Length: 225
Image 1 (cartoon, rainbow, N blue to C red):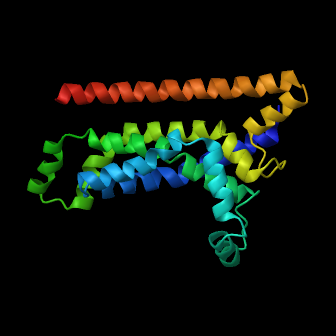
Image 2: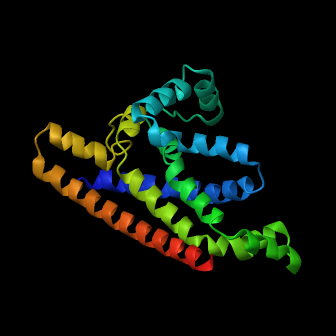
């Protein structure tokens, strides 16, 4: 078992979720005040990583954030951090690649709240922010937990975009999925099998929890309707 790669993947998953979940909540709140057309355009952008091949996203990441580009050069001058072949780079790639897994479940959870309930807070003297924190956010917790689970588990299994942006540097960019690939290349089938089984179990448990929460959320919405 490549414990170093497992630790790196776990760290990557936690850091990715810590950024995407809070921003997903704020984006969902902001989108509630936008027009339908604006929301459709934004959700299309959010969904793009689901249909784009990881190599395409990895290519644009390399071109856009490499030191030879104006953006990559400017970021390096400002932060002295290289976003190519580094942990910072695969973290940035994970943030972009996991947007649909984090933001869309949160968005759907807020959309499932009945409009009548959203309108009722106005008669109680609550401001928009007070209603958001006291009413909408507690009702959307299942979608938020689902997004957290999906983001973390998906980050653990990322391969293509992480390999393109970060390469295969032990202790820095070599994640579990890349380690499995390495073990397969060197015919260490037992090591590869152990790590693959671990990812399978984690993914199964994560999906089971997500499906359970989504099913309960749907049942409650149907009951209220």
